[in-house]
Length: 365
Image (cartoon, rainbow, N blue to C red; front, side):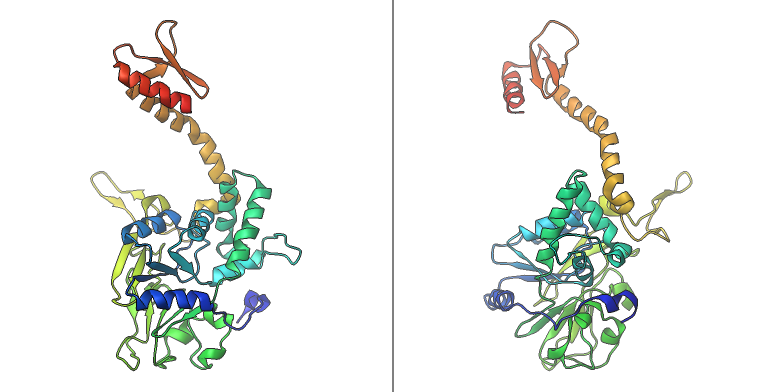
């Protein structure tokens, strides 16, 4: 470990017996268990992926850490995950960095190394979520990050292991620390040694572009005793330049359900229009850009944009009202209905039933 990693406090790898029992029972009952790699704050894309899965009440989605940082809405993502009965998480290195911002006195002080490695977008997302209220944003971060600190760093079942980064092949697998579980890369996946001959290991952290297969999961060429792959890399890269997406992998069949990163969350794309008649040139990354716009001025850039765009949204809403028979009052005659700060005149040619429906909705508003 070099640099700032030495300042992190590492413990023996953490497991949760309750979580492991729940997952094992789910598999034994032939319900679905999906694993998802690093989401990195791409909330809307993740929510679209969950919708694609058509989960039954007993199915489980297991997120392999790095839910936060870099992407546009880590705050919304964590709120969604914490309130979804089908989702279980383990800790990643980005969660571990964020947790360092919690002070011994129960307060919050943003840890500089975290802010330099993707944390500004997460911090900004809480500012946006709190509509610029810093006290409220910090209180929410304290609550969420305290929850992140309770997450296990690995899950061990009868036939599977789940971990964020991997394992050190030269250390007994039952004696490894959070450092290996959260940070290891090449020493793990480039090794020819099978670290667990009984279990397939699912991990994220290292995008599959490093294996030359961006956008696809990568199973190991080495096998365990029953012939299954020794490990499966599932972080296909929510913001890679090849095929940015999130995938959910069925742990039993290795079937992949893919959701490409939504256009609204493609902060890493420089969409440059070519000459007349040519298609939009896409997938050009900003060479120096590592985080979404939420990182700019810690979310204040987004809030400013929302303020400037509110008149446009207002015009759209007024257009919708006009389409069903309401318009801004400009004359003294005609029936009217008041919605918010505006009074609208009802077109006399509209049917009475439509008018009554509009008035009922106006009263609710």
